[in-house]
Image (cartoon, rainbow, N blue to C red; front, side, top):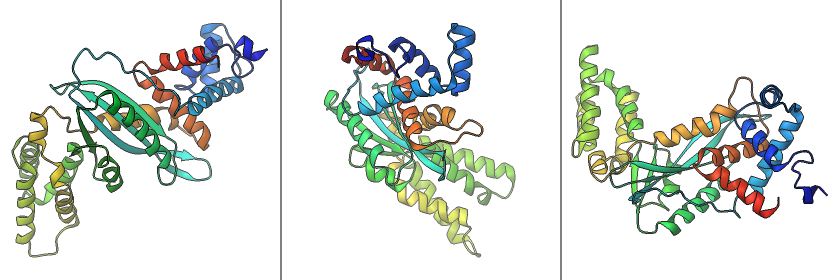
Length: 320
């Protein structure tokens, strides 16, 4: 009976489940229940909101590797795809704050304009195996559609990011703004007064971004400064030199910009906020693993342009 009537969660039509799960992916269950009563003349209990969200989230989880989604019509030629990943933290009951991974695949035109982004995220886990599998699936789907464009890895300096991205991309770009954070740490050592320190930092950031071999020249300057010191090398200077040495081959920013490549991972940092933190890190919130995964799947579908409607079309077409 329920299957023939297409009842979801034993109490809701697909239309109601779609509305409630959309709201629940953005608001706590108590607020969704209140909104449904006040603004939709459809009072619901907090428990029912949670159950519907769980049911829809479970469909998304069950079909994650089975259902594929069409890309939008960009209206422009795709020149490159930037693959990026980053982590934020989520409070897990009994475990404390754990890392939640977020990933993006962003499509760019030859002019460097971002055309579209696919957002993914996975609940905290040891080893990031599930997250890597999801990213592998998304990358494979994009490469099947766009086999001949440039694939760019874009991330901070974390080694596991580059171990993964190196397998899927031909160009590696260190996030420009992480590099400038290291320059800001060392700036107090590079001038006698505050004005001189600001001038050095402004010049260094400009040269890093716009000068040919800018990173190599800054590294040379930092090494020379280290040699001129009579006391022990300050930690900020030592760590900045090491960071530049380890990532110099990923810091050709003047060249990357000429080629229309992005140099900042702000899209992925924004994904950490929009997909994960805005919903999972509200005041006092703690989660179990399964609800976190459901929530991240729903928010990934919502944030990726066109996927939410495609997801519900699949539900309708498959009679779920």
